[in-house]
Length: 248
Ligand code: PXP
Image (cartoon, rainbow, N blue to C red; front, side, top):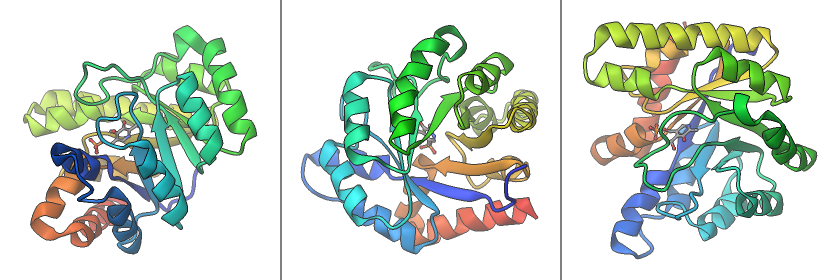
């Protein structure tokens, strides 16, 4: 059983997406991260992709120098990323699958099929003090494999649930929510800390936030989009309110 306080990690990748659309310096993701921190984010999440399509290396330097709240550094399990993570020693490293052709992280990591490889990959990161989490589907095999190789944290991919919600496929939304609910319980039973992320909105966050064993949500795209209309601080405050209301 984890603490009942549900943490909100704000993913600022898409501030960088907007900056990169013009190739200049603005908007600055580090400034956004500091605003998110001031608005009550419990952590900042940033994904340094291999193709640097949004966050770039200097953003990670800037985030590490500026933030008081923990940085959750998302990365693929490559040697290059391991070297960068070991240089910065962020609070958390979330290992995600990555394909160049995908628009965003589609699906979770295949842990079950490469457990010894991932265990060896995680070891120096854990030795350096990073809390390693594995971004996986809400799938029993993957949850069991994550626990078996000693990952302290898993983040369950909420994309299928969030997409079903957005497209009003209610039966599918409910079955995806049931899978997440079951795997939150199972992961917790196996001693894992369980996070959830991807695609969450003000509407879809409630049923996930209501799961008392979920320790952290990582939310980006929707918050950054909503910030255009409300401002970043109010967009985050409203997400926090939705989470707290659901948590009860
Ligand atoms: N968690 C993980 C592991 C992710 O890869 C992402 C997307 O980069 C998120 C959370 C945030 O997803 P979204 O931007 O759709 O809220």
